[in-house]
Image 1 (tube, rainbow, N blue to C red):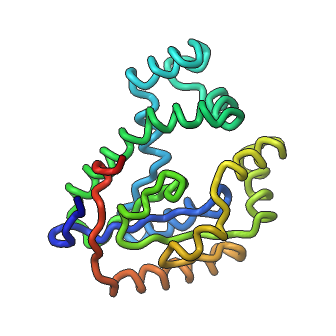
Image 2 (image 1 turned 90 degrees about the vertical axis):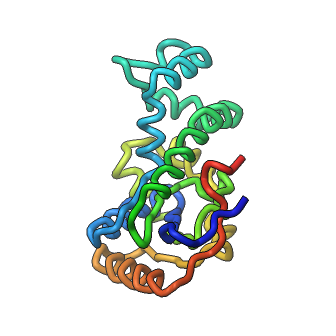
Length: 213
């Protein structure tokens, strides 16, 4: 069932591979007064629910929870080294995230609402958005940013990069591309231009988040 365009905001997806600068673009959009819902933040809150933590401990043992919260480093080391465990984690969290997304759309009174979704294509959520923004950066720059930001070793960084679909497979499936290979000022200009472009675009027929899968 598709969601009619009447009486709902324009639903925009922001995506891009790890280290591309999605969060920087989202921060700039928030500065403009728009609502940006982060899939990672929603997933984090859902992962900390008692039900989710019980499922994690049943699957991986009690030591994946530390001081009453999931140990994200341990979970990351498990899922990025075993595709089956990543499938398990996604099957646990994704439905909860999508229900929260649907609620955000339903209660939004804005003309446009943005969702930052790193795994938008991997989760096959294309049809849930009117338009999709892809943030890109060179592999070398992304690698450098991750080394500085996350203090990971090179093998861990490469595993995280390899777990995502390459940009080359996404370029023809998105509506707006924001290049983030330069300065923050250049990124701000590109983001402003993209928002201006979106304001003139019509709604499409999309599939509600809570009807995916």
